[in-house]
Length: 341
Image 1 (cartoon, helix red, strand yellow):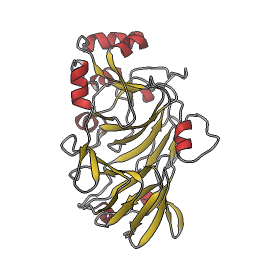
Image 2 (cartoon, one colour; image 1 turned 60 degrees about the horizontal axis):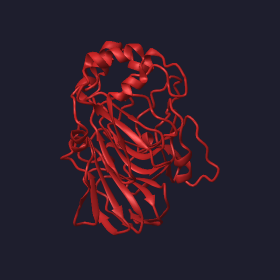
Image 3 (cartoon, rainbow, N blue to C red; image 1 turned 30 degrees about the horizontal axis):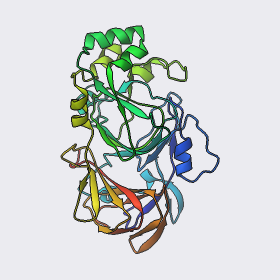
Image 4 (cartoon, rainbow, N blue to C red; image 1 turned 180 degrees about the vertical axis):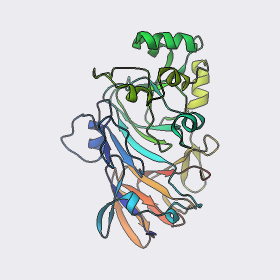
């Protein structure tokens, strides 16, 4: 099926090992939202969630069509991706943490190719939409005095406080853009609501064997069968000062002439691009597909001869080479990798 119009997507919640989701559901318009273990909403997702309790198609997005609600995998064709792509190459999430996520790392492309047989690692980027309190923070990168041997010893002892102390603690603000390359040790702190754009895998190597909530993780949840030594090899042990961390990973938006701001460019990473439209009227057309996520205000999307009235939380898959116009809303425009895989 080749689509010629914007495809509106429905929420697609995925189970995780941490609690959250209340702020996310309020963002989507739910009035009596609560936290649970479904704190992530996956957008333009062709990727299944890798959970201990497997659920078929969990995480894969659903779209609204003339035939009803269908999986995005059953609707979108290669021609819709554009640039002769055979797959989307990207995954977008809304993520809401009521508690700190575990200390973790995601594979680089090289690591993923070696151990998992995939061409995708999991470089990701966080755009902070809201925080629950002033102390919302993230942990990112190893400090100057950390070595692999020291961190491995803390891991074997399961000294969580010691492992956290190895990383830089960065307090976040709304609008912050933080790029997390594959291999970078990190943990999202409690109270962060963000949009995450990433490579389309669900591989997370975990340094904590027990979740913050007290659940014991299985070996597969910790290292996906590669073993603890290979899991520790996934971390980048480059020592950095806090200033070096911010220079490497905290990005500065760039204002463009077409009414958009570039939050993440292909110069920052070839894995994806992220742009922002603020209350402007912009007409755009890309050689690749895009995903539009409305984050504030009401507005209008014109695409394929159709008019969509927008509200916060709406998300649309826009096929390649299709012109679309955004009016009034604040929206994020998410793009796939710069080159095909």
